Image (cartoon, rainbow, N blue to C red; front, side, top):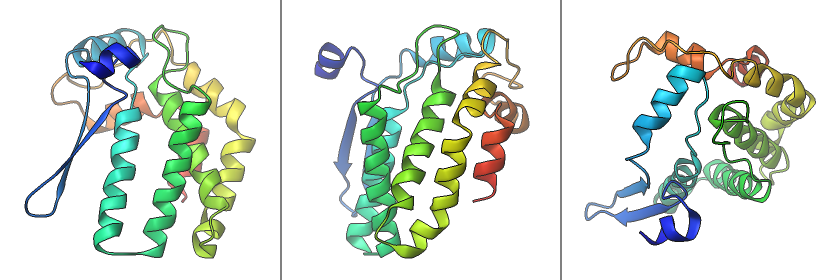
Length: 187
C-alpha cells in the first residue's frame, strides 16, 4: 500500500525475495489495472503500462547472477541498465495515460537508447565497441522513431486474442517503428 500512497502506483515498485535454493523472486506491483490497460491498447493502440518495475527487476536479476557467477560483460550490462533506469527516471519517460502521449513503446525505446549509450561508454572495450554504433543510430534516429511510434496512436490493434495473442500480430502492434526494429534486430 505504501508505494501506491507515495508514488501513485505500485508499478514503480520492486520486491526482491531471495529463495532458499539460491534463486530469487523479482516481483513488480500492479495487477488490478492490467486488464484496463490491455483494453485501452486494443481500442486505441495506446499502452500506458509503466514497465519501470520490470526494468528494475531485470537489473537486479542480472546483478544476482553476476554475484553468483562473476562475469565482466554481465557486470557491464548491469551497470549500463542501472544508468538507463536512472535516465528513465531523471527524464520522466514513463508512459502517458492518454492517447496521443508517448506510451509504453516509447518508454522502451528510451530505456534501450539510454542503455546503449551507457554501454557505448563502458570500461569493457568489447561491450563499448559493440554498442557504440547502436547508441549512435538510436540517437540519430530518435525523431523518426518517435514519429513512427506515435503514428499508431488512436488506432485499434488486433493482437489475435486477449489471453493467447498471436505472436506475429502482437509483435507488429508493439513494434511499429521499422527504424527501431532495424537497429535492434542487427545488434
